[in-house]
Image (cartoon, rainbow, N blue to C red; front, side, top):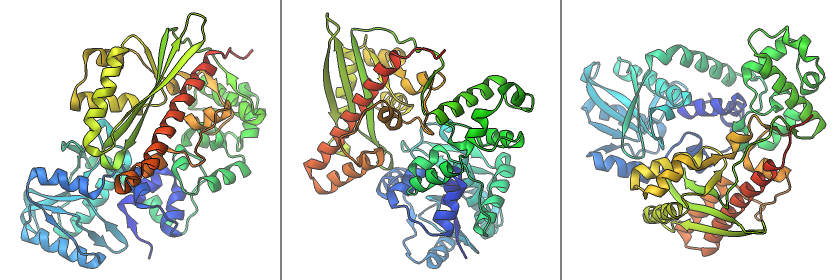
Length: 472
């Protein structure tokens, strides 16, 4: 029978159809893709973190059943920390990063085990529902072995901090999700819904084609599954039907959706059908003689931020511009701190300049590295006051005739092209991995070129946005 593992919950969170494709039909994700989905780290990174905490026992058996037997053997003997253990019950198979012994009464004795996963997370707010699903799944399997079910789940961050979350309060949601996954594994076809998770799917093009063929409402950027259900209940099944609907009449049928949200979705539908963007409101950008456009390249599975790229744009007296790209690059894991310090000093020297970026990554990574390595006062001031997220700025201001509002989607819409045909954040990580393993400088050059294209795309997008006026 098809196995249900802890990763199945992450596939389900991305899109229930992932469960059909990856688990039932056996389509493939490589190791990097799997770790990126659930914020996992490389084994060598996890082992370094565990070594700092003390001794641990490793389950090394390659055969799944042998690994389960060895895990149970360690548990019965009372080993304090088990790394790489395997838990099995029927078609359920789990591989928690760590099993840790705690005091309490169980079938094993005056102790029992809890599961700890090691993830690239920063604080308890970073623990997603699918992480908790994974923890609840571990707890249920642990109960089969030790006859006591842990009531808490645990996650260790890449900094070695252990965070706790409550499993009992999450039980009902876990049960509903588990039941739906089991039905999918048994043959039920999940409802169609295009989500942001589809962007990272190896079968993305198939998903988009299927969605466009049925003109599904999930083509609307950032529409929620509950909103699709409510519109379906009101008789609206497709984007065309929503675009053609009388909003006043439709609003009378909406029980939960606010009028302003319905009107925004209607404008999205019209934009998508007419294939033109719709400016809801102008974005009030501040003027500055110097602007910075910023993008970070990160390797989540190593918890490494290896490139801080900045396009410096200086507006001259005649309003022409002088553009200079700066790359602060770590050519090895050991150079992250040096690359950060160089970038932080640059930021300190440009503490009056507005810094534009796209999405949450840059602001959160800088917060983490300020905490980890420190930064000059001017850099911290810039991070606190001068960072502008273009994604947040445009989200309610401009409607694009696109299902997704990633930087690449929007920049391509306004005419920008990346130099590498296979340019992507995941491929940047692959190129960097290959550089570390092979030392081929051309791979490092591809990483830097990709980053430069990203910041230039950000600059072009901001310039384009600044020119847009509200639609009549």
